[in-house]
Length: 278
Image: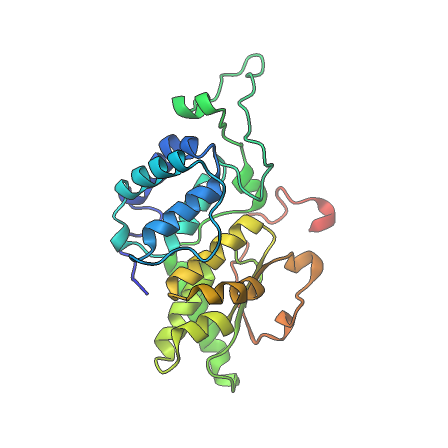
């Protein structure tokens, strides 16, 4: 478990990485955002380790070129798994993933009287256009580390005196890319030094989200952060899963978890949400 030295996502280094990914790396990958996230995970892996699943179908030449650009664009030894969530949430409007149509969006002609959107030349060449409002529509926003730490510590301080289980099980019902799950993992490891961190990651942390790509990102981030073996990947697929906690309720035993953490509605909750779903 490594401490991240950059104040994500506000550092100049992180902004530069996002810009390079948007302008240079996504076009090389034909806009495949999840392929980019997996390449970033490879940059975080120590020597001798590989991802616990089959790589996405990307041409070998393109993948090698993208990985070379990505590795040189950032100081990866100083990074931790949070960088995956920042990249996904920052580039959601520019790439395609499991949460958006499979076809790469094509830039449409500007309406009469309106100025055309300014896109990078390589994005225009490959037809990768910004999907206006995709992040806003999906409610995808990065939660800074100081907020995730505060929320997790406040929940644990309020609940631990009432619980007998040690360490407790924690649920994030809208986990997104796993920022709160990572904060919860680090806090539990700090409070329970006698426990195996791998056991904490596998048995104590649960997440649900309606975005399959974000769930994949959250599993990968937790797998990296806890330094889990490949054999633990199927277990993460059962504890961090795709679902809609508000519409479908919490199932598969998640309703029995003693601690629930989540982000408050920072924005107007009615904005952009259909009336029947409010």
